[in-house]
Amino acid sequence: MKRTLLAGAVLLTFGSAAHAAGEAKNIIFFLGDGMGPATVTASRIFKYGESGSLAMDKLERTARVKTYSNDAQTTDSAPSMAAYMTGVKMNNEVISMSPETVATDPSRDVNGNLGVNNCAAGNGVAVPTILELAKAKGKAVGSITTTELTHATPAATFSHICNRNAQYAIAAQIVPGGAGYNAALLDGVDVLMGGGRNHFTPFDGVTNKAGRADGRNLLAELAAKGYTVAATRAAMSTAANTKKFVGLYSSKGHLEYELDRSATPPLGEGASQPSLAEMTTKAMDILSQNQNGYFLMVEGGRIDHALHGTNAKRALVDTIAFDDAIKAALDKARLTDPSLANTLIVVTADHDHTLTLNGYGKRGNPILDINRNYKDGQPAKDADGNSYTTLVFGNGPNRPQVRANLDSATVLADNYRQETGVRLASETHGGGDVKLLATGAGAKMFKGTLDNTKVYGLLKAAFGL
Image (cartoon, rainbow, N blue to C red):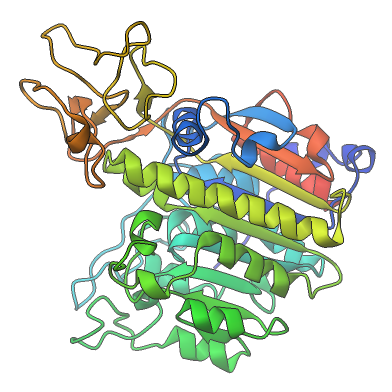
């Protein structure tokens, strides 16, 4: 792939600020996919009550982030994450490419999977990611997620492609020396974790019908390059910290929702999957072996998926699991860097959703329950005399033609989908600003209202790149 380094003003503006704020040896960038302000608030109330605090709430530096993409008021995850990682605005569905790149859908291979990458050679150029720049400086790098490893957010850290759905081609970009490898990764990403083994292993027509049509076993190729390859939490926990590591914990698709992963009995492959907190601390163990420091991206990716399904309960539980990973990282970092003088931790989201808190519910009313009036504690009623939930969505599938009365047993169930204003097959992203929170070395620079591309410049400056 042809590569061109775009040097915009954003890359130069903050150069002197890094020394004033203090260079960070290590950066951990936490991305809650779709974790808009209402999701943060609802998750806080769900777990800790109105007066409680999430771990992310305790980070002392805050900012607002504008998330629009190059061609849309409301972004999708590919260009929004890529803006954080590259400082460049790009079109929806495009991953870490120049602004003029046209999103071109992949087509189906002989097995019916989206295995044919249709990105033309002249369709835009690659723009460097902060992960690649860190690697060039001799630092270790990692990208971990609860989604497929080839999904938009992790892909934006290590790949360049015109369409986020070309996941088989994205997978090939992280195998050192292999066909399609992203050479800017030098000797390879040091830690990779997520789901979707099918994008790395060959189609067999029986157990791996979503596998690769080219017959390549990318996991075997990674192992041949010195990676430890793991498929379970147990294998991850016993893996040597001195070797590169790739952990893919689902045979196909994303990891289980946290609500299902921790259920008894667990669903699917959830029993063998690590939590995001466990993945985070393991990644820190491996990356910290590099004396030059590291960059680690941690995504709580399934928050977004539950919100698309208007299933607020799973979204809130996954947000709490994401917050637990932030706490675990803070605790671990402070064991060797008590004041975080050498460590920068940034927490943000790539975009909002249409979730909102409505009505005048009484304090202490369960956030997932029907709304109860703060004056008398009785169920609040709509104009037709029916009860309703505090959490609703602007759009999505559950829009009844005629509303019925709701009861607590119904709305508190795991699979309940909140009602919506506009009927759509799947809820959309929202275009509102998201929160950013930061602490540690260089955190003072994160303030005010920022375009998402400016965050890249601040990360780069704090890292001394």
